[in-house]
Image (tube, rainbow, N blue to C red; front, side, top):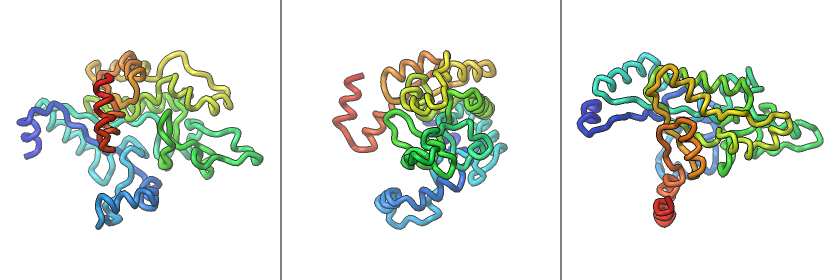
Length: 273
């Protein structure tokens, strides 16, 4: 019985990956992208269409994916864990949404756009922007190529910031902590560095306060023990995230070395730190 097994092995947390509602845009991308199909062939030569579910962090909304259950199931699962003194962690993806999230259509002002490329005289860079969605940018950040199944939020706008803080508050009702995807992307310096041109085009300057300081302060007004774990690259970014109130950071670069079987790079990063 899984719950008792987890308890007997000493686990204090369970992280459920891929709980939230996904859309068809990413699923279609994952089924048709040439490079991805080659990877499927390599890992699972007899793969079928039904094996592909889409990218779990291309989130349409922070509602439970109906493929796995509903909110009552999530509440039940958390209560079972709590009865064994195990806590539940869920995902929060602050930098982007799915391209077919309702906000893309209903609130395009929440997103990063290329204003200059909207001119007929300037061709849009379709590696970075979604022409059919009003030149909204694909989700991206420093040292991360555009993810062509996500839409980039402009977290410097009050509306997008409020939406994501509200989403974090919503998630916090159903778990004891969150694992934050690429949390450093929302650090003011990092965000401004990557999106400087687009921000300058619309006259938006960096805010006075870090997004994470405001978000974490608000979520802990309701639950002062709520745990924030950040995924991040770079020691300076990680230090800043800790200063903003994160409890834990994990080094994404370390995982990248493991995935690529780069033993030398893994050892170098360990000894460097």
